[in-house]
Length: 379
Ligand SMILES: O=C(O)C(=O)C[C@]1(C(=O)O)C=C[C@@H](O)C=C1
Image 1: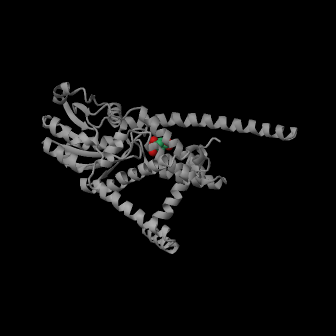
Image 2 (image 1 turned 45 degrees about the horizontal axis):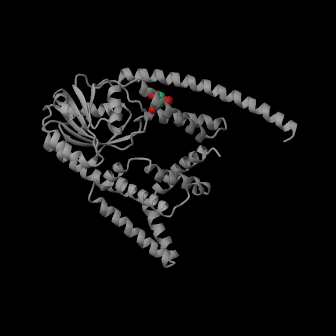
Image 3 (image 1 turned 30 degrees about the horizontal axis):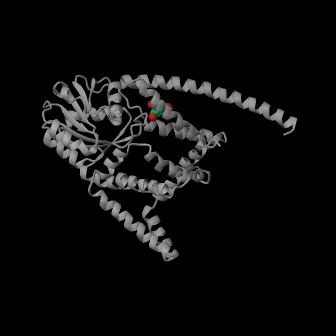
């Protein structure tokens, strides 16, 4: 680079630094305003996530960006990222308490990650939360005597036993709820163990989400909905979306969404391990999509093997779904072995027709994800 180029670049970069610093000041200003919105929402009991406001705001900013010859997608990406920050900041203000005087909330398995997250959210909403973990059963009677809500969130393999053996003497008006990722058996166990209000939930997110805004909680109604309606409203104030389902329909979907998905990620990892693949080399040669896929598989192995064993082994019927998958895999392999290129193309087209409009929609959605995977690279 000659001296003139270096000088020109330096000047321009100084100007860019100045603009970026102005951006920081604007961000600070936005965060302060959002904190004020958080306080207003907190006192009014309004949900953290306001989809209509978001859609209207994004629409207007996109149009304004276009008029200024700025990519509408750029402003949308930036605003979406900023709103993620808003969800976290608004959470710190706390949440309106939907129902007063419910008594203690006892979280059975409260030291687990999901138990801790729910404990934190309920505490931020003003409820007195007590946790009961595996070494605390000696105090169980005292804790339960004062309880207005008991939430069970212990490993799936022991959930039904804990309900059947330990939760039969709750006060009559106390709500018994669970957060288990299967629903049929725990719901039946809760309904048999307790005569009062019963609610099944399955939070469709991990404990590391930061905020519940836009997250889904599946709700299975058990008994006396009017008594636990406040809890559902409270969860909506946290920003989550409730999806009602019958336990059987939920569990059937979970065989595909969870058991089979996690199982195939497990086998993918197992295969890489057996092949002694060199992850550094794979990453060097990887496109963003492969990096994303590897990250999704790799993150599984950063978590508890017991948790995934529990999820995969929880339902007998998952074996069938996984068996069907294996059969389809084998059939597809046959196409390859027999050099049946046309057969592959025909199957591919069949699946594409089945995906219908979702295929282009997913292509569009994943484009943004892949671009942010690329943005994350630092070398
Ligand atoms: O306007 C609101 O209700 C806000 O909470 C602020 C804000 C934002 O950051 O602009 C954040 C979250 C909502 O989903 C919508 C918008």
